[in-house]
Image (cartoon, rainbow, N blue to C red; front, side):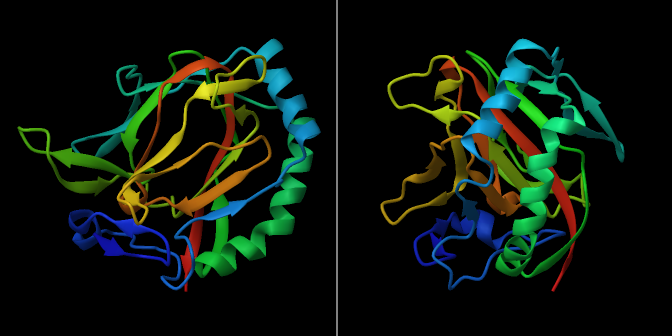
Length: 239
């Protein structure tokens, strides 16, 4: 494994591949990703989660696939089982104010200048919901034996991914607006004991990381409860 920060290591094969966008945090930082705790208050998170849980009709999420150079979204529930909700502007006001407050910290951490971004997606995972290993800017290429041989970029405008958790993880299972299972796992990033990096967040935590294949990740199946995240993908000028 290759050390990419003070406490995190990367799979050698993945670290040595060539990527169209090879953006990483400073290797002298403790971690190659940024976690902002209490990015949004618990009360604001609860209000958003109550809206999506009780009042909003979600749309099943699709996966971007590249067909002969054309990127097409398709419904693939063996890859991803989640729903997307559209939030009213009034529920996004606090999020936008917090993002403006923390934007410079994010830019400094990854040495970028953020430019445009997607609309905020509220992603809902209920019992059995999951998302298999994927990179946010690329499709993974595998051989006939299912081994990874490379990546094909399909979303070059995605440089930085931000994930805000609106509900909290509970080790002993979730109920109400909490959830069990559903951990966010970085498949190619490991701690000093060779364990994959995984997050068991609380409501209000935001995880920020580059969108390239080094940061490939998955959402483990939700065992119970209600997992809700607010996700954006950001374009950026890389310093």
